[in-house]
Image (cartoon, rainbow, N blue to C red; front, side, top):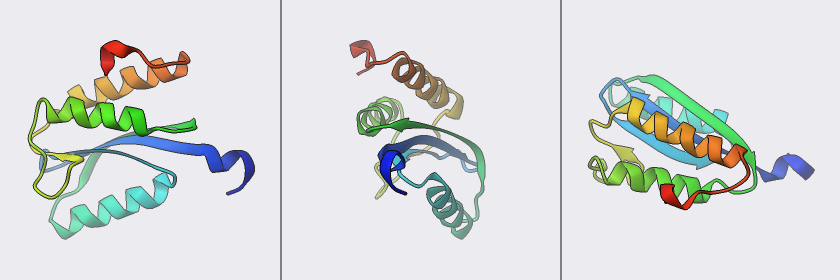
Length: 113
């Protein structure tokens, strides 16, 4: 990657057959997906839901919002601050999409912080 592509970041949410939900951000969404798929298979589970979006610039503020949203509702898997136990994927995904809609509209809304 070079030039304009260097600034692209991805925000994502992944649901697993076990009821775990993972949120995060990355520069390389394909590689991150492969990593999470391997992580899941090593534990005898599979990815069943996934959504991601891309932006130019940082996704870190929204990743922190997603983590906070999940932490307030579910327990993090011990040793994994971004993986939540028995989380409701649809609820996380709805919040994820709300963040994306606000980012597309050109800014952050403090009510979601």
